[in-house]
Amino acid sequence: MLNIEIRRPIVEDINELNQLFRTVITDTFTKEGIEEKVDDIEKEIEVKNKYLVNDFESLGAERYFLVGIHADKIVGSIEYGPASELICDCTNNVFKGLMEVGTVFVNPDYQRMGIGNQLLKDMYFVLQNKGIKEVCLDSGYTSAQKIWKKKFGNPDYLLKDYWGEGFDHMIWKIKVSALV
Figure 1 (cartoon, rainbow, N blue to C red):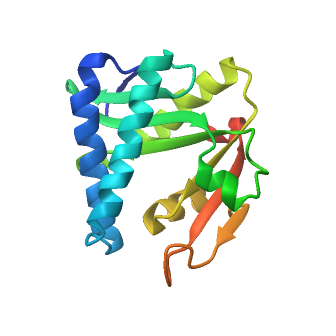
Figure 2: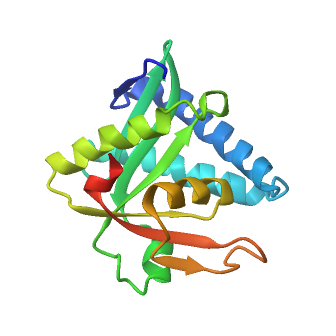
């Protein structure tokens, strides 16, 4: 396992984080076989950048990021904030009051090295210290869905063919203690 420093982002990290979002999202779309959906890639990057700005503007009160650093390079990120509109809509607002863990991104060159698990573990401590007992998490990416199913079991909501034939969307409700 790599030696990773986990910390809160600083303003000087914004450009590097924006590049991480672009790299991971583009790589994921390519691996999913949907790289031609350029508008969707750009929209997703834009949302993640807005979440980051929201973290800085609210001093972590509305969105809260952690970043993983290896050799002075940001190699991963994770954040939590209010459940997305997508989650609320797809659960008929059942998950509306929950916090959502998201933006669990690891640079493709550093994937499968335990960085995502380390980010989840550190986020567990943040959520626990804030008294948060349950969170939600969602994914429309088949590669991420395999990881989350292995880690958290079957999703609470399975939206068959939500993104097109063969592209489901999954939503989990997770006890914070399950993050470690």
